[in-house]
Length: 372
Image (spheres, rainbow, N blue to C red):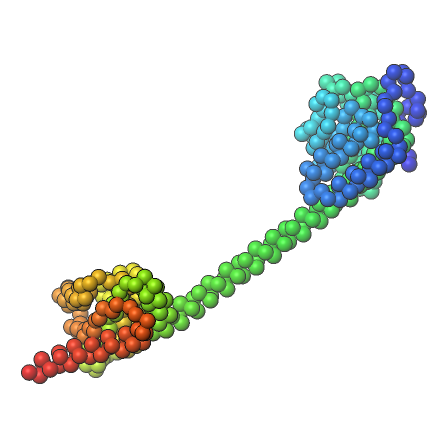
């Protein structure tokens, strides 16, 4: 490996400046551990934390910096040192050693920073640095650099520089892996988001289909299918609680005559007005449905003992409607109503048939009274 140095390898100005070196075999073992740790790193921060400590350990340095290339600048992203260096600062590549290393794609060793014209002395004077070694992160088109620094004059060995370069090469692979991992994560997130949106849209469509299958298009009330689905559940709940329920069966009087006289558009308005009156009369917990044609049914869970209260309230609302709406028709309803104590033999179909018969009894009574 070729690298530039301001002094010959192994030449040290003062024997007292000799650093305690980590044995080469131990250094290789440590480097293998570092390679394994870097292979598991998933963020740049994790990589920098591993590298800054390992760089010091492999070289016996007093400090290490992790430099990233940012356009035409060197960004000192992280450091591990006995005193602050340049963490968080940016310098033009043309004036600092890390930039020189990246531009020339080779390691640089400087045993005495004050005798090397490439050193920006103003930046180094506030620091402890006397000697340094800088290696590029990736030889081909470097993406950064790793610097190690000594507080006393020191000439790193060829083996130390090779170890440092091996660490930098491994770091380059780790950074690329993080980028690939991040891209894959982003793709997974985007794919997951797309699937979630697709599922949400599908659920909306399914909910709309379900709603349409359970509701009456003209009135917005439940249709017969929706009524049975929900009322059956309420009937079972009422049975478990041993409470009572009420059933209301409503038939609009004279709808045929209204259709014949005013047309089916007005007849539809009569159906809609009836549905609105039932909504006003009933609670939110009541299940109101259009049974079909001009017939409506209401399931009322946990109703009170006043069996005629709901019918009376409905009739009062009908009277108010006829007085205040100014329609071309007079709204009238026949109502069958019954309150039931739940037992095991009662079915919803049976309750509906019984209440339907009560409604027809009222309708026949109205006709009889008009004849008489």
